[in-house]
Length: 203
Image (cartoon, rainbow, N blue to C red; front, side):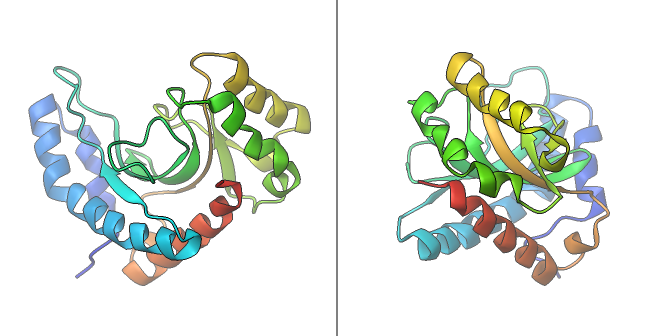
């Protein structure tokens, strides 16, 4: 019996039609693991940073018609919320499990905080080949860092500074059928390894 990971069928909750029905499916098949991951990685991040982190499982409370196309648990040092500060996320779209760290467009002082990616530019470029950039957390599309030029990476960083809706996340994803999702041990190892890489950008 697994506690943390997701089966291929779990991702199919995003095929369920209707807001109420999809929310019910999320409650049954996704949120139990997100809560467990929230508890596990608040402790992990506290050990790694010496700071207190809080887990925020997405509630999708503002939705009244359209069902969510993704869901997540976010980690931040603010107990009341995560959107205003750089934060970590573990979440799912229909076609991927994602782990990421970055700055949402609602972020406070995001022009200053995005500079962490400039300060660690060489490290960003040297991340393993399966790391990518997300310029919009609401969309599943991401671009592998290895396929981007220095100028394209810098443009993504500058966009956060200059565009109101600009945001940037460094991400890593798994296909729903990936072997690392089959057992808790392999999944947690993948997540811990990813978080350790992402913590380089945390300030």
